[in-house]
Length: 140
Image (cartoon, rainbow, N blue to C red; front, side, top):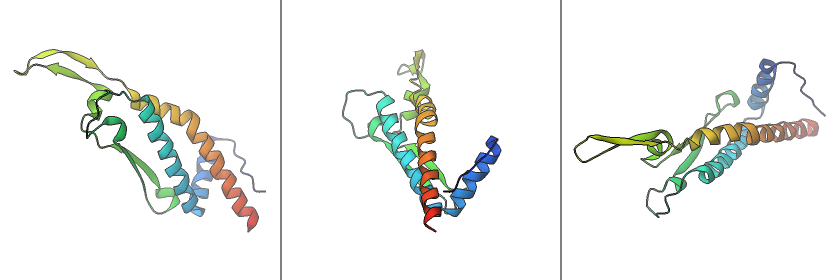
């Protein structure tokens, strides 16, 4: 069985990049799984107005893996909802004349989702990625 022993974070990142370059298809698959889990969590954490609309925030999340080589792979996640940034970061309330009437605090659910995914999903998927690569190396 192949093992990767590192003492510092820079060495670990170097090993992960090397594995991703050697096995780009598997790295892309793991990135896509992380993206799918991110979208599921952000849907759960995001606010729901209770109104069914064409541009519903919970149903607006999309993802795509960009890049062809392991070191160039990146996961892009976005919302197609035009009011996403207003709900997440907050916005000023204005009347019909443009006068400020208050401020609506943001929900900050995107930041909470990123922190949760970093703590729970990424380590598990990284471990699964390394186990999958180890199995492929053993077969060869």
